[in-house]
Image (cartoon, rainbow, N blue to C red; front, top):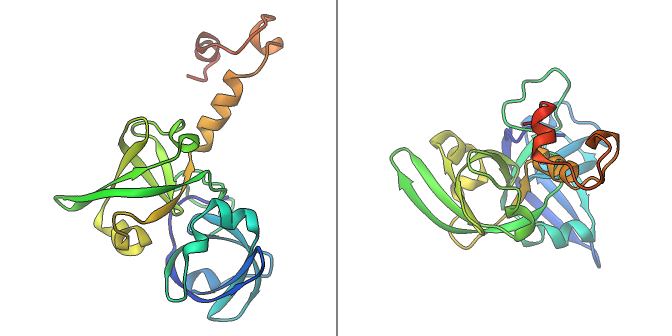
Length: 219
């Protein structure tokens, strides 16, 4: 589990390709200070397991499913990646709850400066957009951001100078693809709304209603 607050940008040192897999060697600093074999590190928002490491680099294995569903297959040596260690119990949750499991890949449509910020518009797939709400949270390449506005197939986020400088999003341009993870709370609400009637629906058959959720403090 992660928070979407990027600790540093690492650099891809080496990529070893298998028939349907890859091993990435990534250069880091902050994330290596207390790393152990088997630790989880989010790389561009993807929860990956450290399989070897030294004081400057760590290796992660990437299976075929992850390559298909993320932008990792587009990486090349020298590329920067967002890095975050797993959340520890007792840490401040500065962003939002991020699982490190990518829901889909979006494409940057356009960017424009708005005073100190950069307003970035991203086109996302339907499986992500159904959870995107105005003023809600979304993780983009692992970075926790607030949705400024959205419609059926695009949404906007605003990057303050700090975020633009310390994450890969400040260096991306229109046409580039980004990993998207929607807020997990929306997925649980969807599941609850689709649940069949039992004791939680006052004995009535069918789906949970908005009235039921409001009456019991969920809304």
